[in-house]
Length: 242
Image (cartoon, rainbow, N blue to C red; front, side, top):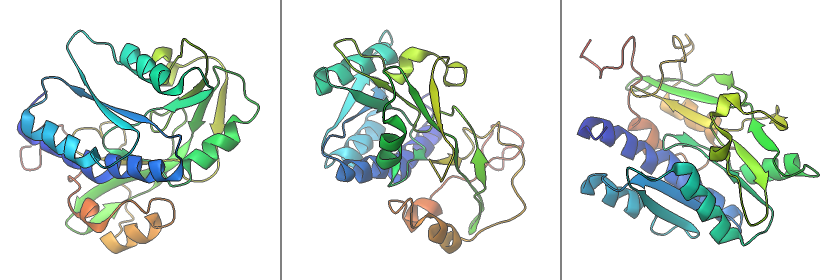
């Protein structure tokens, strides 16, 4: 779990995609709060980088979890503490994902009139892979009930977050599906792309990717793309090891 090469990939993805998204969304709403969940035992150099990446983002807290801590319990308590019983939409995404500048607007529109317990799923997004130094694929992928920005409407003293609902692909109950536009960006790399199949034949340059992302993902900078870990091919090994 704490292999330094793998932690470097995850931390760099957090710095380039996840943290800039938190900052972007916090600027869109003063009522935006977030928690970053990390292991208490995360090696100091990587923990320091995570703390540095979010130190100037308002409404964001880094929470360290021990071996016996529950992600669902910690998340539920955090939401209850910061919202004080009001109606809230709580959502999740991972360290190597990004959400668009219009995410709050889209979720707000889809949530209108919906009862407590309704899950919101944005079904389409970009799947970004880096194939070579200046070569990427970024097809639009339709993936209902994915974890990228998946969230739930809730209120009251006992909140339920998306982590309380079990595996995201098996959630039951009322779900509102956002079927228009781009709802997320997921990066595919050595550590996470086992399910995406072979890369598309159409390739893009760094500038072409940036041009496509400019409207919905202005937080993604050229250096983020250039430092993106190369997509693996047939195995989970790092490049050159198979």
